[in-house]
Image (tube, rainbow, N blue to C red):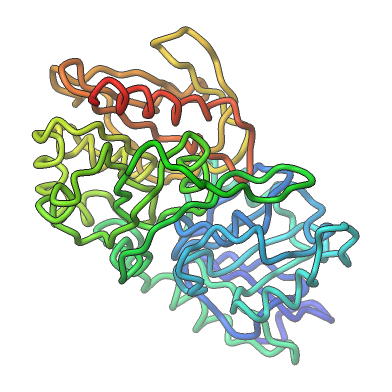
Length: 388
């Protein structure tokens, strides 16, 4: 069906409903299937495309100019470095430009090729965003063929056949397979990343697809992180006698990962150790406390989301990346809602009234995004101080 394409087309996005978006292919050659979402951030494309929470997704950037600051080895968010455990494809309004930044040590297009990320440029990303807002995140196949030859019927059929994210446990693949420690802090100019020399706290991080900047934010408040695989038991975690435990972000359906994670989280809650959950960790903590999670129509993906902290009354602009949400109506006592999204009123945080346990849906470590909610790591440190 290549005759149906416009001249010069080397990339397409085929959606399950039969829609075909045409453009210029970039990055890796081949095709990849996933859920198509949009991200409204104006910066941080490298961090976005290496965030494990985007595993099995194709990201459409609403900001038109991508690639102009190049890439570098410091801005990767993945721990594992396995390309398949982050975004599989990326959509751009304009063809990625050459790098022009003092931190760049690589070209964006070449970086995508190396990582196996398929790109498609020259598409109307705003129209696609509008479609997602109106009809939800579609299943799609992104394809890049330099010779411009595509079997469109086969690509649409592949998109239709994909089962989607519901019921899919992706954390087991995004997680580390070996325990390790982390002592690198936040980045500042001109020093670069700080080094934690004398840790004040020992924290175990359960890795469902953790971002590096979460670990750096922990180091920033004096916590040395011991990162353990997603399947680690509560007994193994508590045997380390940590000052606190963190449940990390990650991809996939929280109910699916919760099949093995929720019983362990319930034991961690019962232990009385300070517990802090982020994103997927927030959702699974909610499940462990008796609440429910549901799939969202278009999700929240971007670095400009307003969230209200109900404990202080302050409104923060935060970074969000999730396609599932906690059903606030299902929260049982003594769980209280602490944060809400001001976009749509969905839950963005919970806490226990009788234990040092809390979590948030957004990403307080940002990267990319504003640092309005970095204080949550200080809040976690305060709970560890009280526990001592």
